[in-house]
Length: 458
Image (tube, rainbow, N blue to C red):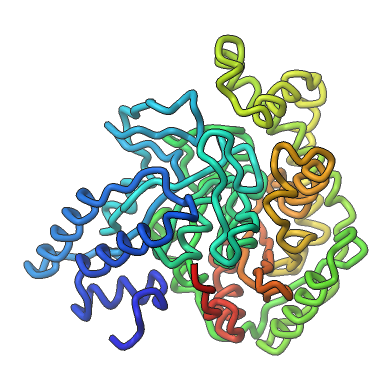
C-alpha cells in the first residue's frame, strides 16, 4: 500500500484492511489523530476514542482469526448527531435534547456495525436539522475545511466537513430539502439523497415524515455505492459502477429554468456536460419549468409537519430554541391546514408529471446543486439581517423541489471557484435509481481530478 491514508477513499481503505496491508487499529488511530488536529473546524460534538480503538482491536482480531469480514471492515466513520444508539446521548444539535439518551439503536447504524465499520464520534448539525449553512446557536458554527470563513452547508454540516477534512471515509447525514447535498456541494465531497422511503427512518430524529431521508456522504461515488449496498442490503450499487456512459442519456437543465446563477457555476455545468458527453453519454437539453413550484410545495409540507412535531416543546420551552429555528417553527404553525393537505395531494400528480415529462427517456438530469458560489459565514449569520434572508432563501432553491418529489439526487464536485472553493454537480434520477446515479458519478469522477484536489493547510 503506497497511498497515504488521507488520500484513500472508503473502498480503498476497506480493501487494504481486509488484504492485511494495514490494520484497523492504525487506520482508526490516524482518524482520531486527524479529528484532534482539525478541532477548530468544530465538526464533532463527541468523540469516542476508547470505544473506537476497542472496536478496531476487535476488528483486527477477527481478521487474524480468519472470520468472515464485512464490506466496511475496520473503516472509521462518524455520523450526524441524530441517529440513535441505545445508551448514548443524541443531542440533535439542540439544547432541548442535550441529555436525551436513546433506548434503541437506529437500524442504519446496526447495518454499518454489522458490516464492520467503526464509529469514532458524532457530528455537528444544525439545530433539529433546520438550517442550510452550518450555523448553530448552541454549538457554534461548523467551519469549511477549504476556507474556515466559508459556510459548510447544512444541516449535515459536520458530516460534510469531517469527510472533506479526511477525518473519516464516510458519514451519515439526513436530507429533507438538501441537507446532504448542500454540505457535499460546499465541502467538495460526494453525497446522496436516496429515494424517499428507500432507507428506514426508524430511530433517527424526525423533522418531516413526508420528506426526511438518511443519506451517505463520502469521498467518491464508489464509496457511496458501497455504503448504499450495506444500508439497503442490496448488492447492486457498487456492481453497477462503470468507466464510461455509453448508452446513457443525461439531460442538462436549461439555463432559463435554473434562474439567476453565478457565472462560475454555469461555466462549471457547461464543462461537466462536455465531460459527460466525452464519456459516451447522450447529453440533451431538458426543461423543468415547475422547479419553483416543487420547492414551494415542499415548504408547505415540511414546515407544518415540523411545527406539529415540536408543538409540545414550543409551548413549554420556546426560549430553549435558537431564534432562527423557533421562528421557522412558528411560521409552520401559521400555515393553513388546507395548504398542507393540498400540497400532499398534489405530490403524486407532480411526480407522475415529472417522470412522464422532463425525466422521460433519461437516466439522469444534471444541474448545479446551488445557484451561488459558496457564501461567507458572516453573510449567512442569524444577525446578518436581509443578507441572511437572501443567502438562506437561495441555498436550497435547486434541491428542495426534488425532496418534494421524493426522487434521488447525487452530488459530486464539478470544479472550484477563483477562491478555491468547491462547486457541486447534482444528478437527479427516477425513484430507486440510486445505482444509476452512482454509476454516472463514478464515471464522471474518473474522468476529472476534482476529488484529488489537496486541501489547504488547516
